[in-house]
Amino acid sequence: MKIGKASATTSVKVTPVKAKSQATTTESVDAGTKTKHSASPSSHMQLLTLAKQFVVDGALLSPDKQAPLEERMRKRERLLQLRKQQNLENIIQKAIPYCSSNEVTDRADQDWFNSFTALAEDISNNTMQELWAKILAGEIAAPGSFSLKSLSAFRNLSISEAKLLSKACALAVRDHSYRNMRIISGASQTPGLFNFFSKSREQHINLSQFGLAYSELLTLADNHLIFIQETETSPISKGESISLNYNGSPFTIVADKNNCLLRFYKFTPVGSELAQLIGDNANQKYFNSIKQAFSGLFSIKD
Image (cartoon, rainbow, N blue to C red):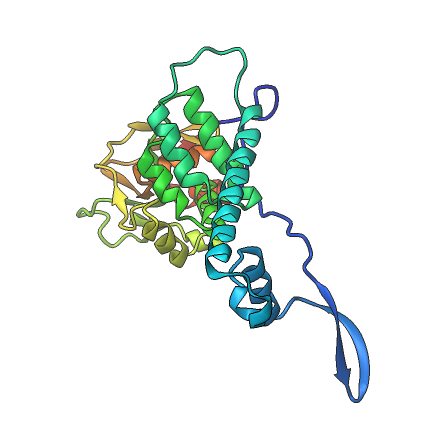
């Protein structure tokens, strides 16, 4: 299931938010001459700004200007509740365009929605709100699409980790069920008398050449999105085929020799669920590399 606007595109790419410039004009002394230049706020200024925004700057004021501690506490709690309310309303507003006004669906689970709001209420980043909106719209359209386990995992993802998931999805293939996702990383033929010393018996795809370094695979594994141990298919006989889908395009892998195997990194169930948020973004260089590297072991037919 892909989530999209009813009358527009059906996929969404994770893209960085263009942050509003926080540059400030400061004065610096260069060889005794004062010059104005643009610079990011110092850590001191950033801390003061955050403390003020979240109403925890009371102790920084002079004693005669400090409100009573209990009053400051109540003000902070009220502000936090207002912030959570605003976050949820923003997410609901973003989710509406992704919902159909014509299709009839099963009744949404109120307990799921209650858990969703508890997890999403602290999400203030615009890009992450967009993704949470897609989760909400997808679950309302097809109850059971996103488990609470997946929501909890997604809640702990940073922006950079969400982008990393997008990079992994750009290299991933799906089976016919569209639920199991894998990143093909190599191919081989089981050793035998006539191929034991053949250099073409083992083929490996260097994923880092296509933007996914091993350290990034470890990060995905730490977030329970993929299994870090490579797995492989059972031996495939000559002429036997496997039908897969690469970012919206179906293709078939056919074994050219007996006892050939494919190696891959497999997405976890949580990773496969969250991958529904990522639109089709195929890396054609990666796909072409597979075709070339596996020549002699497998043929790939689009």
